[in-house]
Image (cartoon, rainbow, N blue to C red; front, side, top):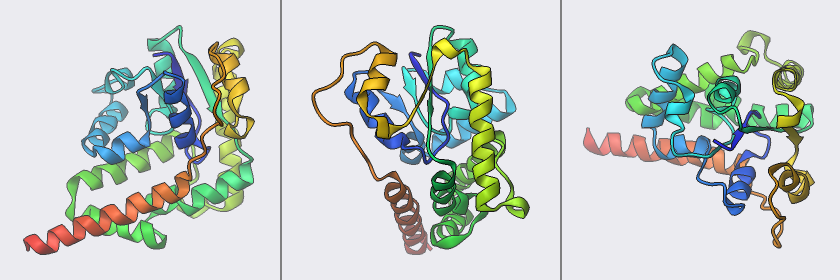
Length: 227
């Protein structure tokens, strides 16, 4: 593995996946891999119980960004001692709002796509595994549970998590970077030439919500048709 993405979701990670693959570092493992193949969720749950390693699940991927691999950055550093680490940054308050509008609803079954996700989990065992995986990743990342969850507590947890990464990763192997900074810092860190084209920007909030809602609707319709 060449690059380990330690950053939390909602930090422009889908844009990062596209960018890294444009740089020739793909295939890049990202949450969309799990959404495209829900059997992956059960494998990540095995990483939690220790029956699989993160490196085993990521075999064949020279780069990983976002959950589910992010919280396992230390384990991956041990497995790949020459790899570099990317910590994707964002202002804590805007990150908390983005997380609150997306992943938080799936974690706590609130909001439209949270309710749709919960409904799908009742009839789709693979999706149930995905929901459980999200809960485990939430806890592994030190994010607040529902009783203590506010935008401020979520933003504070984001800062704590990032501080831990900075403390745990050698400075010469770590880049703290925002997609808004564009190609130059990323390419300098990776020792790669800067592409001629603009840095890609993908609306991953919209992508996330659409995948949750559309997937739930399709599964519910299939279940009704089969009943």
